[in-house]
Each structure stands twice: as structure tokens, then as C-alpha cells.
Length: 90
Image (cartoon, rainbow, N blue to C red; front, side, top):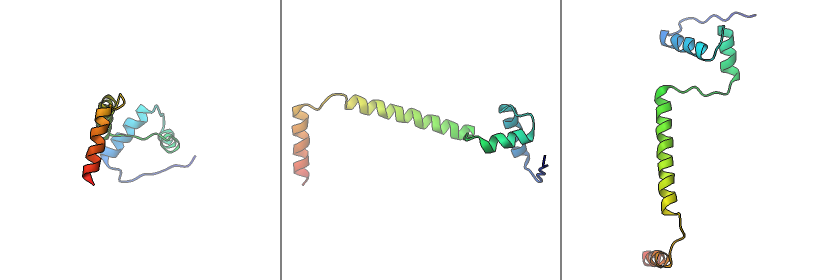
């Protein structure tokens, strides 16, 4: 097996790699490297994860609002009003 030597690794990065090693259940650094390279997982930090969750919640709220507004077919009165607004805009 080939040995890989990494120099000048920042302490924060080393801590993150150690955390990932434990989290992914890897016994060796080679296992961790293999897992990171072969897996198609996207690793998110907490800030990006919270922004993603907020975006999903906002999208679902928007979906609910739009679904509520467009739940039923428009009435004849609404269609007439919409068409008149369109004609006056020309």
C-alpha cells in the first residue's frame, strides 16, 4: 500500500477530517479518503445547511400560498375584470 504524506495541514482542517473519519465510521485515513472520493455525498457545513432548510421552508410556504390562491377556477367576474385590465393596458 502506498503512503501519502500531507504537510502543513491547518489545524481546523485536521479537526474536520478527524470528525468526518469518526462520523463515516472509517478506521484508517485511507478508508476516509476512499469514502470521500468514491461517495457522491455533498458535505454541508452548518451555516449552509441552515440556509438550505430556510430556503426549503420558504418555498413550501410560497407553494401553499399559490396553491390556495389558484385552488379553484376563476369566476366569470374575475375573468372579465382580468380581460378588461389587459385591454386597457394596450
